Length: 372
Image (cartoon, rainbow, N blue to C red; front, top):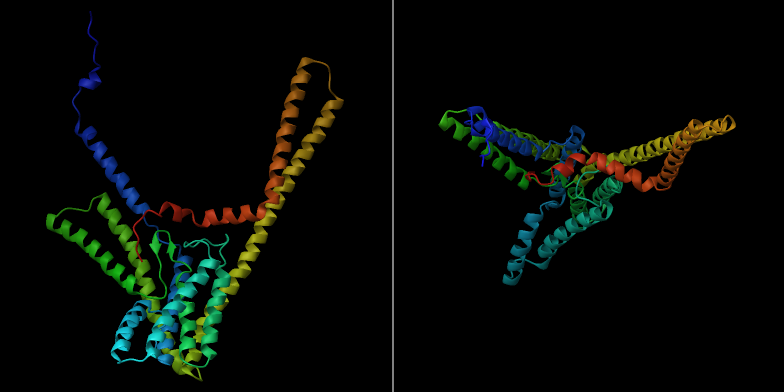
């Protein structure tokens, strides 16, 4: 009975290259996954978020200067509720200050609730079923009403509702959580991101070695996050400065300065609604042209088949050609039928297609690290 011969390749010792190829490949795959966990939003998305942060910073500063209440500080208002409630039982504060804190929190929640009614998802996906334009116009309307309403509590509640609406408008995009009306979480993430980057370099500095692929990927991802976070904080700060100076420049009561962020958000909302309508009409036109092209092609096939039938002979070869032509005609008719069904449902399909195109990077990064 003969023994099975083992190939020489199985008995050959592993070379250093074969031993290192598997770990190197795993490191590269891990580095690629880390890089995909966060993608920097497009520049116009960043500009959109940064400008909204500037508007919120201006509105918050103007509200405090006008009514001595912060409109977007839900954390402070919630703490004030507990503080005022304790003081109310001790007889140190009246019910008016407790009512102010409660109404500010409630107004912010109502603004975010209105955003949930207008925008169906918490990720930026232009076109689709999201009414970003209407949300921005509503934000502007609330700020305009706050600029002209008498009293103290009611106007600042309108500003707080506008902040809640704006903050819920684009909470997440490409793996980064974006908050535009407060910067507590933003500054926290800035500090933690800087700490992670510094720790990577400190470990390598002590070992006197270079960064590997995984560490380079982590530094690259954290650097992109840091750029987004620093932009949000900087624009919020600049918006506050602009709000203070505009309050001193614009004649009339200080709350009239709210017209500046209201004008920006309202104009942006109207511009978006106009562009959205134009883009939808353009997509419908393309679908209509595609349907007409397929219909014309099917007509040409039918005409060609008619001419073939007139010149048909009784040979087997001609019967085979006729069968092929009939198959092509049936396929063309199926295409026309499919295009006709697509044209009947073009409104929903166009919106879903546009949504999937603009949020393609978001689905890939939904499992990434949360930042901003």
